[in-house]
Image 1 (cartoon, rainbow, N blue to C red):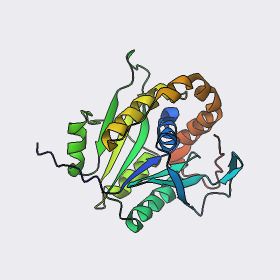
Image 2 (image 1 turned 30 degrees about the horizontal axis):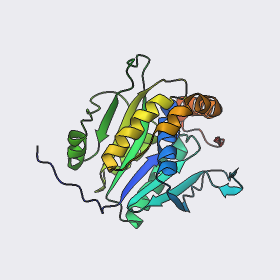
Image 3 (image 1 turned 45 degrees about the horizontal axis):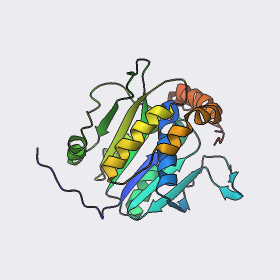
Image 4 (image 1 turned 135 degrees about the vertical axis):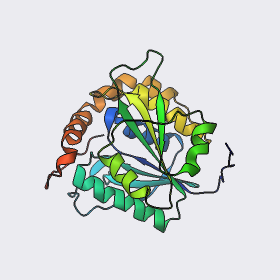
Amino acid sequence: MKIVKPNIQEKTLLVGFPSNGLVGTFAISYLIHSLKMRQVGEIEISDLPSSLFIENGEILTPIRVYQKKNIFVIISDVPLNQLLAQSFAHAVHEFCKKNSIKKIIIVSGMETVNKEKNGSKIFGLITHSVLDSILYKNQIPKFLEGSIFGTDAAIISIFRKTKIPALVLYAECHPFFPDPEASIVAIETLAKVLDVKVDIKDIKNRIDKLRIQHRKLMEETLRTLQRQQQEKQGNTPQIYR
């Protein structure tokens, strides 16, 4: 296999949202904190009811954009039903076109009830063969079979038809509870892919607190995942931090 040397100046977009085990939520939020990324914008979705929350006296919207040099992040703090997932996916694509993004990386969870004692495994799914070298270089096995639905599927469905390649990192996780341990595996893998240094000591020390703090978000995410294929109108997601 020919290994293409990555262009470190290329703009990369990371995408995180509540999904199985809240892996994407934990991993992307922690990366924003660890890399000291600054908020540079917001993503507005017309079907998303107006919602705000306050953190350290600052007013924040549910879907925000962060940046550090050539790395961008779009993170949603709300679980997205099927209707909102489609709108979110189109908004992500529009952002990529307007900002000359060269590739996107989605972090999500792959539910499993038989996680190995020595930690979660992580798998990669790519939309374009040009990203094969990332999997090879970082020894990430391919996601070979299974079904995908919800927000991941909405984004993948759009980007596989565009020139912008997408990589989804799926970490094995518990299907019914927040899984910070799986998120640590995702963070470490993402740091290798991006070639950045991330100290995971803080999240290791806060594992139990994170499970309790995000219990309500996990419950809402489970309900949303269960009805994502039903395309119900008027579903109002709640914000949890």
